Image 1 (cartoon, chains in turn brown, red):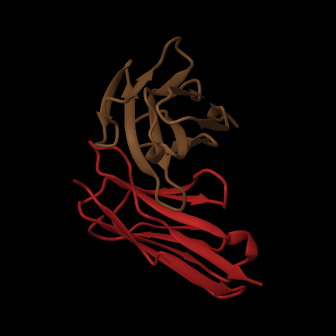
Image 2 (cartoon, one colour; image 1 turned 180 degrees about the vertical axis):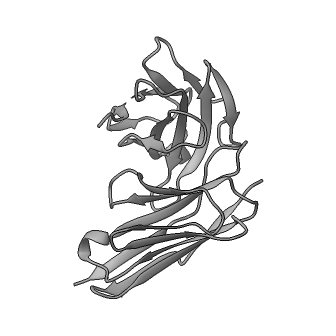
Image 3 (cartoon, one colour; image 1 turned 30 degrees about the vertical axis):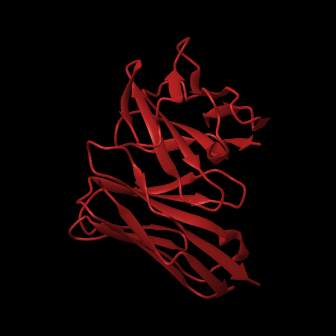
Length: 113
Length: 110
Protein backbone atom coordinates (compact mmCIF):
# COMPACT_ATOMS: atom_id res chain seq x y z
CA UNK A 1 0.00 0.00 0.00
CA UNK A 2 1.37 3.44 -0.86
CA UNK A 3 2.52 5.44 2.09
CA UNK A 4 3.72 8.87 3.11
CA UNK A 5 7.36 8.83 4.09
CA UNK A 6 9.07 11.32 6.34
CA UNK A 7 12.68 12.10 7.20
CA UNK A 8 14.31 12.40 9.61
CA UNK A 9 12.46 10.27 12.11
CA UNK A 10 14.08 12.17 14.95
CA UNK A 11 16.06 15.41 15.05
CA UNK A 12 17.61 17.21 17.97
CA UNK A 13 18.49 20.83 17.37
CA UNK A 14 19.73 23.82 19.29
CA UNK A 15 17.32 26.66 19.93
CA UNK A 16 17.61 29.27 17.19
CA UNK A 17 18.76 26.80 14.54
CA UNK A 18 16.95 26.15 11.30
CA UNK A 19 15.32 22.80 10.72
CA UNK A 20 13.95 21.24 7.56
CA UNK A 21 11.60 18.29 7.78
CA UNK A 22 11.07 16.32 4.62
CA UNK A 23 8.12 14.37 3.33
CA UNK A 24 7.32 12.35 0.25
CA UNK A 25 3.54 12.27 -0.14
CA UNK A 26 1.65 9.53 -1.95
CA UNK A 27 2.27 10.03 -5.64
CA UNK A 28 -1.21 10.71 -7.03
CA UNK A 29 -2.30 12.89 -4.14
CA UNK A 30 -3.01 16.55 -4.63
CA UNK A 31 -3.39 17.97 -1.13
CA UNK A 32 -0.57 18.06 1.37
CA UNK A 33 -0.55 18.90 5.04
CA UNK A 34 1.65 19.39 8.01
CA UNK A 35 0.27 18.67 11.44
CA UNK A 36 2.05 18.66 14.74
CA UNK A 37 1.44 16.86 17.99
CA UNK A 38 3.03 18.03 21.20
CA UNK A 39 3.69 15.06 23.48
CA UNK A 40 0.45 13.78 24.95
CA UNK A 41 -1.72 16.32 23.17
CA UNK A 42 -3.97 16.34 20.15
CA UNK A 43 -3.00 16.52 16.52
CA UNK A 44 -2.94 20.20 15.47
CA UNK A 45 -3.23 21.54 11.94
CA UNK A 46 -0.37 23.69 10.73
CA UNK A 47 -0.77 24.21 7.01
CA UNK A 48 -2.34 22.83 3.87
CA UNK A 49 -0.84 23.04 0.41
CA UNK A 50 -2.50 22.61 -2.95
CA UNK A 51 -1.54 23.52 -6.48
CA UNK A 52 1.89 24.71 -5.36
CA UNK A 53 0.65 27.19 -2.82
CA UNK A 54 -0.54 27.38 0.73
CA UNK A 55 -4.32 27.01 0.82
CA UNK A 56 -4.78 27.41 4.55
CA UNK A 57 -2.66 27.90 7.64
CA UNK A 58 -3.28 28.01 11.36
CA UNK A 59 -2.19 30.64 13.86
CA UNK A 60 0.62 28.29 14.85
CA UNK A 61 2.12 28.63 11.37
CA UNK A 62 3.77 32.00 11.86
CA UNK A 63 6.59 33.67 9.93
CA UNK A 64 9.11 31.19 11.31
CA UNK A 65 7.48 28.42 9.30
CA UNK A 66 7.52 27.86 5.58
CA UNK A 67 6.65 25.01 3.23
CA UNK A 68 7.92 24.09 -0.19
CA UNK A 69 7.36 21.50 -2.84
CA UNK A 70 10.67 21.94 -4.60
CA UNK A 71 10.64 19.12 -7.13
CA UNK A 72 7.18 17.64 -7.55
CA UNK A 73 7.72 14.81 -5.10
CA UNK A 74 9.13 16.24 -1.87
CA UNK A 75 7.17 18.44 0.48
CA UNK A 76 9.21 20.23 3.13
CA UNK A 77 8.53 22.13 6.31
CA UNK A 78 11.16 24.63 7.37
CA UNK A 79 11.37 26.21 10.78
CA UNK A 80 13.72 29.17 10.51
CA UNK A 81 14.69 29.76 14.11
CA UNK A 82 13.50 26.98 16.39
CA UNK A 83 12.12 27.64 19.85
CA UNK A 84 11.82 25.25 22.74
CA UNK A 85 8.06 25.11 22.27
CA UNK A 86 8.53 23.82 18.72
CA UNK A 87 9.47 20.45 20.22
CA UNK A 88 6.82 18.08 18.94
CA UNK A 89 6.08 15.29 16.52
CA UNK A 90 5.49 16.73 13.07
CA UNK A 91 3.28 14.70 10.78
CA UNK A 92 3.12 15.13 7.05
CA UNK A 93 -0.08 13.98 5.42
CA UNK A 94 -1.48 13.76 1.94
CA UNK A 95 -4.90 13.42 0.42
CA UNK A 96 -6.02 12.49 -3.05
CA UNK A 97 -8.90 14.93 -3.07
CA UNK A 98 -10.47 17.23 -0.54
CA UNK A 99 -12.77 15.37 1.84
CA UNK A 100 -11.08 12.02 1.24
CA UNK A 101 -9.00 10.02 3.67
CA UNK A 102 -5.88 11.74 4.88
CA UNK A 103 -2.84 9.49 5.05
CA UNK A 104 -0.25 10.32 7.64
CA UNK A 105 3.45 9.68 7.60
CA UNK A 106 5.11 8.17 10.62
CA UNK A 107 6.22 11.55 11.83
CA UNK A 108 9.41 13.44 12.55
CA UNK A 109 10.11 13.92 16.20
CA UNK A 110 11.76 17.31 16.75
CA UNK A 111 13.48 18.08 20.02
CA UNK A 112 14.70 21.64 20.53
CA UNK A 113 17.26 22.05 23.32
CA UNK B 1 -13.45 28.72 14.35
CA UNK B 2 -14.62 25.16 14.12
CA UNK B 3 -14.04 23.10 17.25
CA UNK B 4 -14.27 19.38 17.81
CA UNK B 5 -14.76 18.17 21.35
CA UNK B 6 -14.13 14.59 22.32
CA UNK B 7 -14.85 12.76 25.56
CA UNK B 8 -13.70 11.09 27.65
CA UNK B 9 -10.05 12.05 27.58
CA UNK B 10 -9.00 8.74 29.14
CA UNK B 11 -10.71 5.42 29.59
CA UNK B 12 -9.40 2.38 31.41
CA UNK B 13 -11.31 -0.84 30.87
CA UNK B 14 -10.90 -4.48 31.74
CA UNK B 15 -10.35 -6.69 28.76
CA UNK B 16 -13.73 -7.82 27.50
CA UNK B 17 -15.56 -4.66 28.56
CA UNK B 18 -17.06 -2.30 26.06
CA UNK B 19 -15.71 1.17 25.29
CA UNK B 20 -17.29 4.27 23.76
CA UNK B 21 -15.84 7.64 22.81
CA UNK B 22 -17.97 10.60 21.79
CA UNK B 23 -17.24 13.44 19.46
CA UNK B 24 -19.09 16.76 19.10
CA UNK B 25 -18.50 19.46 16.52
CA UNK B 26 -19.37 23.12 16.90
CA UNK B 27 -20.41 23.21 13.23
CA UNK B 28 -22.25 20.90 10.88
CA UNK B 29 -19.84 18.56 9.17
CA UNK B 30 -19.56 17.27 5.63
CA UNK B 31 -17.91 14.15 6.99
CA UNK B 32 -16.27 12.83 10.07
CA UNK B 33 -13.25 10.60 10.16
CA UNK B 34 -11.88 8.40 12.89
CA UNK B 35 -8.22 7.64 13.43
CA UNK B 36 -6.34 5.38 15.81
CA UNK B 37 -2.90 6.22 17.08
CA UNK B 38 -0.97 3.49 18.84
CA UNK B 39 1.51 4.62 21.52
CA UNK B 40 4.52 6.10 19.72
CA UNK B 41 2.83 5.78 16.35
CA UNK B 42 1.08 7.96 13.84
CA UNK B 43 -2.64 8.43 13.26
CA UNK B 44 -4.06 5.67 11.10
CA UNK B 45 -7.34 6.12 9.30
CA UNK B 46 -10.15 3.87 10.49
CA UNK B 47 -13.28 5.07 8.77
CA UNK B 48 -15.16 7.98 7.27
CA UNK B 49 -18.84 8.75 7.82
CA UNK B 50 -20.66 10.99 5.39
CA UNK B 51 -24.40 10.56 5.66
CA UNK B 52 -26.69 11.79 8.39
CA UNK B 53 -27.48 8.96 10.81
CA UNK B 54 -24.94 6.67 9.18
CA UNK B 55 -23.77 3.60 11.08
CA UNK B 56 -20.77 1.58 9.99
CA UNK B 57 -19.23 -1.50 11.52
CA UNK B 58 -15.74 -2.90 11.39
CA UNK B 59 -15.67 -6.17 13.30
CA UNK B 60 -16.01 -5.11 16.95
CA UNK B 61 -16.03 -1.37 16.14
CA UNK B 62 -19.27 0.50 15.50
CA UNK B 63 -19.22 4.08 14.25
CA UNK B 64 -22.21 6.39 14.23
CA UNK B 65 -22.79 9.80 12.69
CA UNK B 66 -25.53 11.87 14.25
CA UNK B 67 -28.66 12.97 12.42
CA UNK B 68 -27.56 16.60 12.58
CA UNK B 69 -24.07 15.68 11.34
CA UNK B 70 -22.51 17.37 14.35
CA UNK B 71 -21.76 14.41 16.56
CA UNK B 72 -20.33 10.95 16.26
CA UNK B 73 -19.39 8.00 18.38
CA UNK B 74 -17.10 5.01 18.26
CA UNK B 75 -18.06 1.94 20.22
CA UNK B 76 -15.79 -1.05 20.72
CA UNK B 77 -17.41 -4.27 21.91
CA UNK B 78 -15.44 -6.65 24.11
CA UNK B 79 -12.17 -4.76 24.11
CA UNK B 80 -8.89 -6.55 23.58
CA UNK B 81 -5.36 -5.50 24.48
CA UNK B 82 -4.75 -4.78 20.79
CA UNK B 83 -7.33 -1.99 21.02
CA UNK B 84 -4.97 0.09 23.18
CA UNK B 85 -4.23 3.51 21.75
CA UNK B 86 -5.71 6.95 21.31
CA UNK B 87 -8.79 7.29 19.17
CA UNK B 88 -9.26 10.62 17.43
CA UNK B 89 -12.25 11.91 15.61
CA UNK B 90 -11.63 14.53 12.94
CA UNK B 91 -14.31 16.66 11.39
CA UNK B 92 -14.34 18.15 7.94
CA UNK B 93 -16.73 21.05 7.37
CA UNK B 94 -16.18 21.25 3.64
CA UNK B 95 -14.11 24.38 3.24
CA UNK B 96 -11.74 24.13 6.17
CA UNK B 97 -8.92 21.82 7.14
CA UNK B 98 -9.67 18.64 9.02
CA UNK B 99 -10.03 19.47 12.72
CA UNK B 100 -9.08 16.83 15.23
CA UNK B 101 -10.60 16.22 18.62
CA UNK B 102 -8.25 15.85 21.58
CA UNK B 103 -8.59 12.10 21.45
CA UNK B 104 -9.58 9.42 23.91
CA UNK B 105 -6.73 7.36 25.26
CA UNK B 106 -7.86 3.79 25.82
CA UNK B 107 -6.06 1.47 28.22
CA UNK B 108 -7.09 -2.16 28.39
CA UNK B 109 -6.21 -4.16 31.47
CA UNK B 110 -5.76 -7.85 30.79
